Length: 250
Figure (cartoon, rainbow, N blue to C red):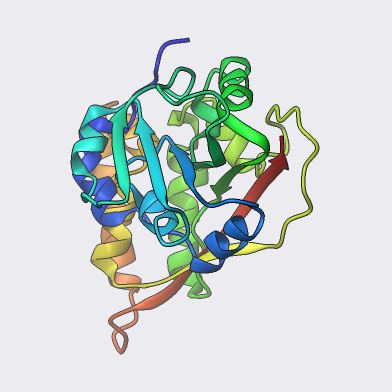
């Protein structure tokens, strides 16, 4: 299966606007591991998860099939960034304590990836993959506009793999006995520019806008409506994304 590269052309924006993950998620993942020598962060993007994992493991091997994404990653002495596909890595057999996949499992050739997981994990090593769903806020007007943009305007322009996210990975192949895991969520306080920058990284939105001038105009109308709906007495408002975590001891 060919690598579907939806993010190289917005690697800088991805780095600037994609949310990072709650610290308690990484505390939990580290607690599952008997040893903390090496973690493989697969499909690392610009290293959001890798940077957090470096706080708990001796070394992080962070891979991504997109060279543009890897080039945007912030260097760290404890992280090795390598442009490699998820299904074939240069890791040694049975060398890894933990494998993490953040918001990317749905892009992989899963049978080949799971074979690689079994090859590189130590006995009783941990595989953890998670996704986060659509952004939400208690500010109803803004929530409704973002929902409209996602569900009513751009949803049909997302790849078919997006269905896995919408269904919180309940329908994705995961041929291991799942651990019972706590609930996590991403929480951010963002200004309007940060919200619009994040929305601009949506692959479905970019596909929609490539469809023609009318789509550009409609997108601009929704963005202006979000700006106009922003509370005049607040620079930032609170957003959250529910996280669905799949974890197994292999």
